[in-house]
Amino acid sequence: MRVEAVRGMTDILPEEALLWQYVEAEIREAFALYGYREIRTPIVERAELFARGVGEATDIVHKEMYVFPDKKGQMLALRPEATASVVRAYLEHGLHARGGVAKLYYLGPMFRYEKPQKGRKRQFHQYGVEAIGSLDPALDAEVIDLAWYIMERLGLRREGLFLRLNSIGCPEDRPRYRETLREYFLPHREKLCSDCKRRLEENPLRILDCKVPSCREVAEDAPRSLDHLCPGCRAHFERLLGYLDALGLSYELDPKLVRGLDYYTRTVFELASRDLGAQDALLGGGRYDGLAEALGGPPTPGVGFAGGMERLILVLGDREPPDRCFRLITGPTVYILPVGEGEVTEALRVLARLRRAGIPADMDYAGRSLRKRLQVASQLGVRYALFLGEEELSRSAAKVRDLSTGQEEYVPFGELVPYLQGKSRR
Ligand code: AMP
Image (cartoon, rainbow, N blue to C red):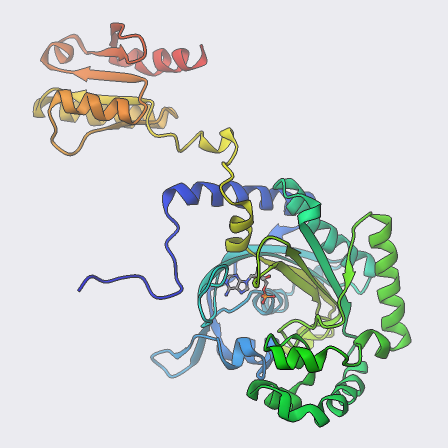
């Protein structure tokens, strides 16, 4: 039996990878413009990091995390998200000591054992930012503005997108709100799914974003966190709304938005697409003012978001990346044709020289006839065929045929690079 890829873990084939490269480059540039610098954390972390950071009772940790012991029995995990890793690295390397706000970004694969479907994979890729070290609601506004800017840069229409926004308050508000929710849901316990029955005990906030229809129905009239904020959290949220209005960024207040990770405090948001169906969230984020402490660090506020690359690629649809992206990937412009085995060494030398000069060049390795090789070259869209035979070797020159005109001329080996570069400038 043939070995196949693991369910939910997909190959990104060359054609599609081109679009990925383009999208990643745009995202990196947007992040850099907003002052974020890249951080690369390991894919494997101690499982404890996510249990403490994301939360033991969350679906992500409780049900979806890939956990395994290493040879010494230490429990490790494939990272299901990157915020906990970034904050761990921030604490571990004392980035907080450098003062101000640390603005960090990442791009990379994440792993969750979920039911694979459109826009939901077991290995998927996230791009995200973390701004660590400030409570200022202006920073929340900046992070949301950055999320919108990425969509704009990629040419997605604002009308096709919308931002869900909510505030879930601080750790002081949370127990009171949890209790209010528990009191509300308790009489409806029998209508809740088995997961939500558990959530009723562990974290009734999570019932609000359950997708099971009977739970949704009950949640419809549930008390709103916005009505249970302390004065500090209320003022923070109102200032954020003021900044968003000033920036002309639209939002919809969504009292059911609580997000699946325990570390969120105050602001939570999702940028969603109207074209994506059930899995419509392009990115999600918010504040996590208690995360650093949960990981054993000093109290350090933070705000950020993470977006799914797969979903972004889906909404971009069949869009072709712009021409400049094809620069390195159009295939060879030069094809070398050694006539016999005796010319292969020289062909390899010429190839190496052209490539080092930035000229995409290739040759046939399938042992095909000269006629067949020329056919392959024109299928590849090659512009110049370079023939190397005994005659050419004795003249230390290659016979260069311009495949678009059929014109041929001998060019000494030493002049090939300037000759071909000169041609490409014309
Ligand atoms: P989260 O880390 O759950 O807040 O998710 C942030 C974003 O990552 C979502 O809005 C999605 O775009 C993307 N995402 C999360 N889980 C998956 C998954 N299993 N497959 C593909 N994309 C995902």
